[in-house]
Length: 302
Image 1 (cartoon, rainbow, N blue to C red):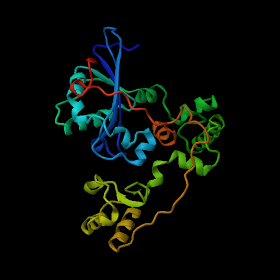
Image 2: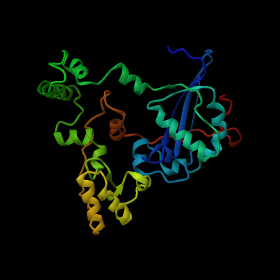
Image 3: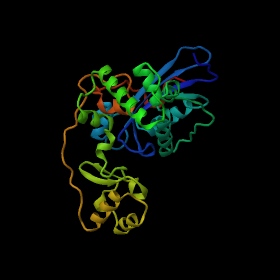
């Protein structure tokens, strides 16, 4: 058991869209608090009215719809009570710094002073990676029950990687058995790349830019100023990015081919990354949690 010097708040947020943390709007927040003096833990959760529409992609991941948050309190209404409790404590969460960044941005938008201060962060995702390293040598020991043939030598590493992959497919029978299905599963994010580096991606069948001042707004390629496209042509970018920019200057834009992406044939294995789980798990609709009175939205939790 971890030694605590002050309350530890394990918290998580769900957001309205797959955008950078500072642009994300919270649609649900929940936390579980434990104390160093051994008093009973406390927990709380609430839907949040984000003030913007939840995207279909986000709903597919977490199951929260626009109707479910329609009558929820805004984050601004919750902010004073949250600021009161999220003080002089430490934080825990899976990939917790993402949640912290979203929370901090929401506090700023609400005009509520808040900072991490000297808080310590406990992240089981990072602990897992540290406790169980995922180098090829580790994979050989885990799945082949032997040491690597000759680590960091090309031919031996290649053969070990193939052996590990074949044993993994035999172990995790719920994985696809064809290479197309495995590719789509392992590189789900990359399927939207228009160029190999993801400088341009598909968004709702339209090519958008992902970097620079226009990338922050996911500006469509067809709406980029000619001067910016010319800057790309002079810059240190891949040939694919330059070809896209040159064609755009001449009014030519990519057209996306529709494909069907295979999904899991069964429940996802335990030993997969959170990103893969988020794409492949079917999440049931969530019930509306009870709402606290607006006068004291977090009750006596603190």
